[in-house]
Image (cartoon, rainbow, N blue to C red; front, side, top):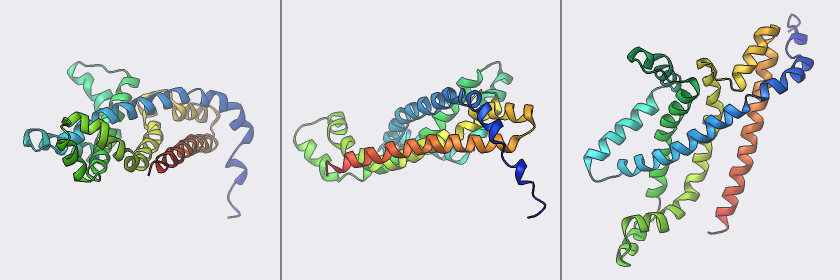
Length: 225
């Protein structure tokens, strides 16, 4: 322990001076995470419906999609879109490649969450709705979804937290988000350790705020029990 240069672990002056520049990339981080989560929710909802469909022509493609996306690293998907597509003559800008990659990847996890939360609703709700003459979509949006939201909220929040942290991978395809800017400063000042600690604290702060919002939503849903 005596040989460790603790003075080189963290430079407060560099951290403070570079903070505005690093924080200027937070717009890309939030853009990627919010858009990907929203798109993943929409896509995941319909994949979940296909996953539970009685028609095999819908069920098996949905299962294959979920299996593939959950089994392939998001970094590989990013590389396929950004570095692989130009091989066939399709050039995708880095930010769009990141948005597509995180959207399609998160949709697989969200689909399984939605499927399980919908399954948690008592089947008698469907039978009662059918007896009342409600259509499938009237039952889904008016009765089933409101009850399943509370069950789905905690795992969906975890998916969003994972997306926020995973946006740092977009730096590898040159998206100027938080981590990419920190790497630039670290390379310029020859002090990556300080910048990585700064980035860690920034991500921690963002995820902590999201956790507070998650707790608020859970308490609100508890009031309706």
